[in-house]
Image (cartoon, rainbow, N blue to C red):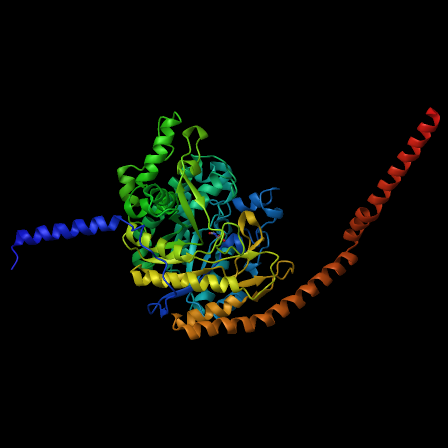
Length: 584
Ligand code: NOJ
């Protein structure tokens, strides 16, 4: 028998080994195996997602206040073709129809977001609570539950009430933490008896970087190298506060969970044998996912962010780092505030080391000292940034497991787009993307990653932020030219449905059959859509002819303007000839 002290030495050794193993992701391990046939654990949850501003429309209806996206999209030059989410998919009026689509897919969960200004028009609870907005979400939640679909609700998918932006500067101001907490508290109070999965923030990286660094997203600020860090700092604190509110006031009664949804592309070192490239790839991930995940799971910003931003700030002559710091009380208050981690993942980049001198000026992007590359052979059917690289998904999930203590994960977004003009409903590229990405997730589960659910992004084609409607992510095609916004199933609906009903990929023969069957059904949808589009075009032409104001305008632009121009040219020519004659 071992002596007690020998045993404790062994314990310490095992502990040290575990701890050191817990910190290291094996960059050299090859995660690119062949297709894996098998099924997901029983109880695995399958879903689709959407968000309020992207789909609801009804931007100024039933007492809704304005959000920063309403204001941003109404300014010229901010969104492709100056499109807005004013009516989008008209989801606000189509709850029943959309739930029928969810039922058709036989889903377990539906992820949607609540529009803060729809239920609190100014964002401030003491100003006004809009009961009509509450009623809308009540209706949606109740209908989901009646159909045995679990709601996963995001509190903040980017649509901050405009009043909070105007009065306080939005996420540049500490006061957002309390306002957000009041809003979340109201949601727990009014919906928490039925909603058991809460996501505080969707993709805070985008809020911080695109909202406050590049200005591509609302509120469109370009506070390079400082704005994003400040925004992220308050968002992390706001998340933690809401988690504690739930924990203290609601958890015992409502028995739900509160998490956050973080997006992260995978970063793969260009040269796997180069230590510099490995470090650059790790920096890419730490500045993306780790920026938010590390404080929440490990209690502080990633060391590498503190080092790089601190050093560059000093070189730029600043007395303190542009990256704010957490006090030790804050660190312990924030650490552990996540019952489940939402992961949004779409694509991968190759990363190599690249120095940017501090004299370039402050910027989130140059703080990282790296360059992003892509392999031109990677498929990219729709969005310019979205290349299909399935193995990156498994790598990311394994990284999360190792870095953050194997948390419970729900994949909250994963999907691919095609261009607006594409009317092909037989979306081979999406079936392929889902097949391979879901398979990589299955492999990650076999690796020991604790993934409990998957959310395909997205249910419908919808407003794609600064890209307007130019990119279609939907399983269902939406005909935006038709004011009724009809939905048509793409082939991937059938394909995803089979994955769900088989809970994975039982065997090769079956999976190949799914593809064939999906293609068979989508050709009839294609015909339907083509016929409907011809009708819409004809109706639009008729409307133009019959609408007196439009025909008047048409007459002005097509007849009056050209005639006046020609007359002017003729008169000038005659006048010129007259002058020339007199001169001679
Ligand atoms: C992440 C965002 O959360 C979501 O709203 C968007 O549709 C997808 N990226 C695709 O761009």
